[in-house]
Length: 441
Image: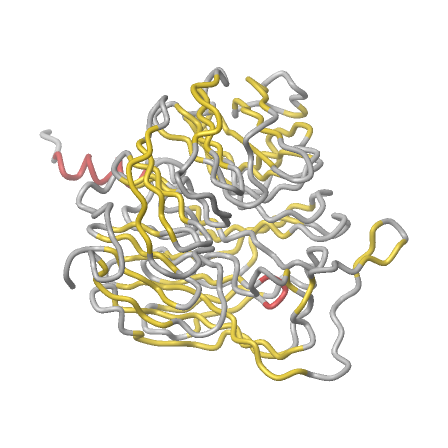
């Protein structure tokens, strides 16, 4: 019997690993595979106000979540602060037996409105705006942060927007609420949550770590219904990183990073596959993946990078740690892994390039010509690294084992959210506007 080639191709696509066969759209935090890598070649890499800006749209409120893109729709979240409520107090935090109040924690004494927006990717017009939650928040946020920090995710049918203790919400593309799910109280030492949802097959997966870890867990929820299918308890204190998927030893693994432990789970069942000693420093940056190597990092109070070969079993100790490096990391921005190299970035924008397999240093301290601060994570577009600063500038660096600065593109307002990339466009969320970088409409 002759086999239909298209049928075989369809079967291969259906059975491919979700850790490697991602949709083409920038559908979640850091893009299709959660790695900040785009292979788009038709995207302009030079812009300014009035040059290659297809549109810019004012966005209400305050949000550090990234835009996501599917087809001709762009989605993002925002938080609008309302009136002061006298006497309102957030949840209490403890370090050991002592009560702890973060000196930069703000916002819990004001009403907050948490919103999900959809925009037309061609014109920037807001198609719909929905209030997911409104009221007094469970906890404070960092004064330089936002209650809309986690990036939403989409599978082309629904948009999944997470706001920590204020819930996870699923909307269809017309803006109808399909379901909502409550995680319970999640305290993050008074500075707000940062982890974003990860999509795997028919599941939405969330890492819900809180304060000192007594009630931390990771959970999987059915995308269509909002039903919980598994929940794994974890003794890991609050962190702000997003789990990553990696293919190793013939299976998919979900790797969740923390101060105490790095743990890999079976994303279908929640079964723990392996673990090793954690970063012993605050986990904010997301891990990056190079083949079956997972590179995890932290930048405060200590700087540490570890490269771990996935695919182990049980407590692997240090047996699968390939290399360590103790410089060049950031408190907030995540690194990159691209073409066999790992790019670390400090909060001041200094780049370090390492060999992903060996940790060999290619260069350290690569500078852009203008000093600045950074909260957005870098992205790769067409073999170029884009670093987006709180000054509103995007510095373009050539990817490769030597540092080569190419140009600076100004937009005129601070950029704290990481960019999204789609065919012909880069979407950049500034402090007040969403910008579409591209030619025409």
